[in-house]
Length: 247
Image (cartoon, rainbow, N blue to C red; front, side, top):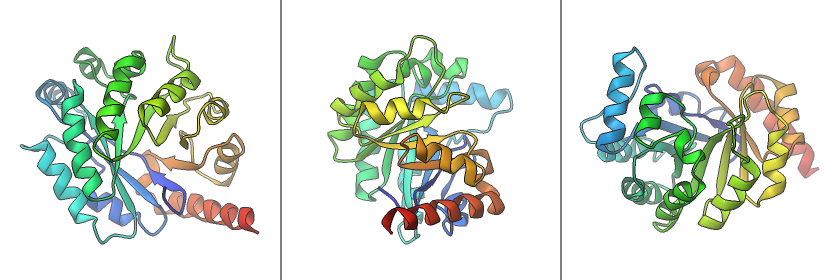
């Protein structure tokens, strides 16, 4: 899906094309966004901004997705976009744009802010597998490469079951924020034939080795994605382990 197998995880209001380009020396993929696509999710994002959270709120979110991906068309990194919407229809539209740039269309079933959950975004999708699969099918129908961003430690959610369901719906990858339950990566990797991206606490060689030992295909870096020293450490480890695996 991408090489080297280090991704940059989206950071609300900060993860744009310039951010991705700065880290392209070390990472194989960059997931821009998150971006709210429809009016309910945009209103939730405005409420988040009102309480001092950074969010992308361009006048036309789909045009923003297109512009940002176009800006990376010649960059040595595979782009993607982390997407939020209250219904599947805007996801379908964004997936068409992602397909045109060979970008990853990442459905956000991860965010837990009350404002987003109230309008049916983020973690509410994780708690409602049928709805989440509707979003996956909408994106997959447009021919996009589909990832689903999820989190561990959500009461009542079995991520292994989620992985099997989204795979049947047409997902290609699952991006797992392991929280403090790193072993959940093994459960997900064993449950489905998806490309598994492990996130949370990826800072050094030890954390990379741990996640890959659990069966992750790649790792992602969130908050330190603008720290060249962290990216260099993680990127070098990913490269070295890949060479060892090929030897």
